[in-house]
Image 1 (cartoon, rainbow, N blue to C red):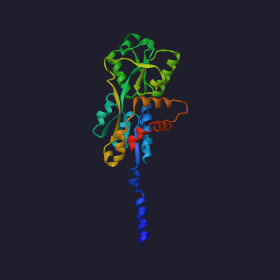
Image 2 (cartoon, rainbow, N blue to C red):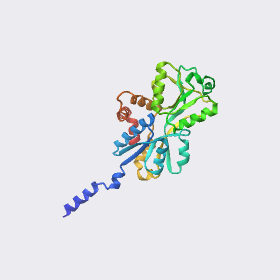
Image 3 (spheres, rainbow, N blue to C red):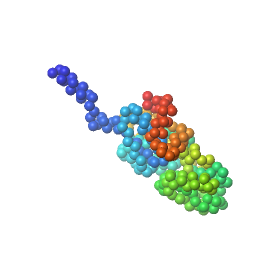
Image 4 (cartoon, helix red, strand yellow):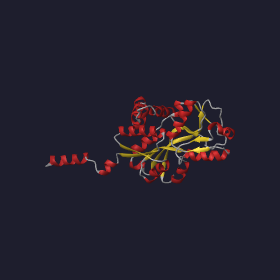
Length: 278
């Protein structure tokens, strides 16, 4: 009888309740930008090493912030501040926790081929015709697009901001570089295009795009109490611009899979990852 009772107790101890099982599930929201894909996949694999089941949720920027604020997502490592996604932070800062930067030295603005005679946004006042009177942009709701519209007004430029996506923007850049034509694109660092092409940012004397940006980690309220180990890993999670751009460039190779390039980076940076999770 005693052996039977002991066995039952052991079974009970080894069997997770639904609540306990759920406590090992982590939901990470992100925007499908090249840098966020890299960071999110690396973090996913790191958390899986600690036994967590990780679900990654691709969303538009506004929805990403909202998901963390409502608790539909536990965290995100794709929050650009203070300018790019600053409006979302101001709206939702009391409903989520800003853990802090995971990438520093980030930047947004307009970029051109390094060989371009354009050096400043102001140059477009008189040389807009050299780039077809266009600035090639990305998703219409993105923070950099709002900053770009503000820049056009601030500088009084005779250019049109063309919306699209990260993919259409980089495709236009690739074609222009191949044909040795000038082009202006919305740009941010880290991004793989800076690892692949010789580019330069246009000077922004009016600071329409602000100063340097950082990419930040967000957490839902109470994550620290509910999942202290996950919270501690999020606090320590950091990447360099150089590392992100190298993995982003690898992801652009034919047949590349973000999970595999993330795994390769982890294997080559074992000490860094161990510093997050141990």
